[in-house]
Structures are given as structure tokens and as C-alpha cells.
Image 1 (tube, helix red, strand yellow):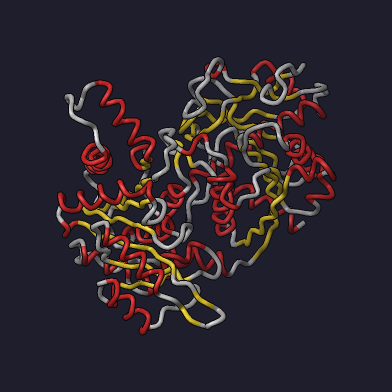
Image 2: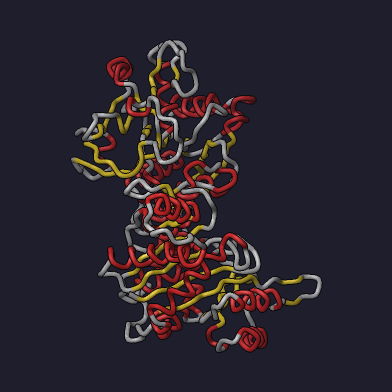
Length: 536
């Protein structure tokens, strides 16, 4: 296996994840099998207990691992299926080291950062290598910024690992910022020089430097960076701000032939140039769509990254229909104050995403009611499915006060309730219903149609509360249909209203399995229905 390690400097949020994912895209289109990985220096074992305001969305893998949102980019930009081995945090590293020390695995030696902690990081690299013998290239992104105290052990582990596997099998890529000082009208290279100097102090000489820049990178600055950072000028690559969509990033990096630089460094230069025609067509459908719809996303986390995978899935579905999806972000607390009609107004579809906690719930319920009564296409995901059931139970089935026990433990009609296996659970981390589960589709339903007549599906979950089976008959008598049940437990997975043009709620998170040129079936159906609504 060959290894690519991507580090970042100067500031955070430069787009290391997108750079790494874009390189993965280019290498895959050269015919190589690529796998991606993220090392996060924070002390949380995983991001599962972090606030969306601070960390953005939690991206769930098939095996139930709660991971960083960058793994969503990895799975969308490449075809590799990731597992919990593909996301390592300092919390996991130290937890493993302490457990080994308590068991006596270190045979009485003094446990130290070097070699024991750095060895634990290298063990993860070797484990991924051994478990994926058919993979040609492993791309590992290191979170944070070079020079951060919490990241030093990861940098040291990579330095050691490169020596052990041979430098000819490793490519170090450093992503930095080239700030444009508008008052002077100049791009400044000094932050990049200082960042690379810091990396070299830690024992790593980058092979390729990716420069994030608003403007283009002229040859004078390219040569200056090359000279002061000890790399060839051709290995200084511009990563420009893209105009329309993140899916332009691989095409932008291709301009400086970064894939050629990488394969030459790791001995895979015999591979053919990337065939990007399908990717280019997908990007063109995003940039030059024939149609347009407006989708209201009624959530309670204002941070852009809190619903990252949902926004990307909407873009994929829009491209499938040659349609621009304009996203109208709605704060559900505003709905509680002013009403759904005033806040949402005229849109072509309403999507209510997942979430936790009581804040804003009545606003989400009102959004579902507005979509049902006005016959606007509706798509509820996880909690969005649950609030649709609550609204239907209250206003159609006349179950006064119907609610979820998450928000009202003593509700008269707990149409949504805690899963039995969750009763008594105290630890919050990694204890929900997580990962891919199989479910059956009911024939002659919208869900069955959207999935192309499939009998079973596998979708990823992240929740503690479920549709209460005691209310199944009451809800179905009112006109809501249950169109999918989990294969193992018989839990309700999808609900829909046949009398409505498009009204569907999924207990799982379909956004995690949507990809460019492979839009998720429910998202595809939702945007198709929104397009039809807009035409009418």
C-alpha cells in the first residue's frame, strides 16, 4: 500500500478534507483503489456527544461509527466504504493505551508518549492496511493545524511510520493559506513559509504544498514558496476558491496536475490520466441547470455544517433532475413565534431534518402540518419523521396531546417512545441505534416505488426514539401508511400519506448514502415532486 498524509497550516477550515477527498477522486479516476482516513486530535472518543453548533453534523458509517463530517466528503467523493477504523481520535488512542496499561500489556515498563502513544497511532495505520489488501492508496487527513499542541503526537507518529514503510511509499501534502492583502493588492507567502518551517522542525518535509487562495497563484510566488519551503516549483499547487460547487475542487486541483505529482512520488506513475467526463457532466448540471426549485429546510441548528450531508444530497438530486435547488434555511423557533405560513411562505418543498432535544419541536410540528395541509411536498428525516407522526396523530387522528416521550414523559398519547433497549442507558456516547439496518418495503407504496420495486433496503440510523407500535392501527386508520419495517425488530422505518402529492418520513438518515451521479432514491423523488409542484 502507498500512503498520502495531508496536514494543514496557518489556520483551520482551509478545506483539508476537500483537498484530500479531491485527490482521492482523481486517483480513483486513474484506476486506483483508494481508501480514506481521518485522524482527529481532540480528546472526545468520537464526535457523537458534541454539539452541532460546535462540530457540525455527526456522520454515521455503515458499521455504526459516529465520525467527523469529513468522512462524509470521503464517501461522497470516492467509492471506498469506510468503517470505524477510518476515524481515529486522541480519545481513542489514550483510552486504548490506558486499558493496555491496566491489563499489564506493557509488562511493567513506564508508559510514555513515545513510544506507546505514537505506536498506538501507527497500529491503526497498519490495521487499516492489513484489512484492505486490495487498496492501492490510503489517504489520511490529520485534523487541526500544524503547531497545535494536541496534534504533535500524530505528526511524530507519521514521521516514524514514513521511515518504517519507506519514504518512497509515502507522500506528505501540506495545505496552507495564501492570504490576499487587499489594501496592498498582494498575496503574502510568509504564513506558508512559517507553517512549512514548523512542520520541518517536527521532522517532516512536505513533498507537495497546496495553497488555498482567492486569486490565482502567479509564477513568482510559486517560485518563492518553492525556494523557501525546499520543494520543486511544480509541487506548489494552487487550490482556488471555486465559483459554484465543491464538486469543482477535483477539476481545479487537476489544473496543476496534482494527481500526476502524487503518483510520481509514490511510484504509481504508470497509471493513466484520470477519465473525468462523468464527473464533469455532473458539475455542469449543477452549474447550468434548466430548472429551479426552492426547498425550505426547517431546522434549529443555524451552523451550515450541521446539515451538511442533507444539503449535499439535495444537490445530487437536483443534478439528477437538471434542477438548481435553492435552500431556504428556516429557524423553527421563528415558526413557533410567527407561524409556519408567515415564516416558510411559498416554497416547492419542505424538509425537516433530524435533531435532539425539546427546543423548537413545536415549530417542526407546525412545519409538517403546513406541508400536509397545503399539499406541499414534504420529507421528514429521523426527528422530521417523528414530528410528522405527532402532527398527524394530533390533528387527523384527534389524539389530543400526542407527543414523544423525549419531550413529554407523561404524555397521554406517546406515539413516539423510547426504544426498549434504551431504557436504563446512562452513557450517551455510541449507545443509540446506530449504523446500517435492513428493512422490508411494503408493496404498492410510494417508498416501494422510489426504491425501484426493491424488496429490502439497508439504511443508516442514529436515534433513540421510535414510532410506538401501540398506535400503528390508529394512525393507519387516519390515512397514514407505514411503508417499511425493520427486518429484525419490526420497527417502523418509513411513513407516508398516499392522499398527499408527496409526503414521506424516514426514521433513518438517507443523506448518508447519497453520492454525485447516484442521488438517493427518496431525495430524487422529493426533488422530482418539488419540480412538479413548481410547474403547477
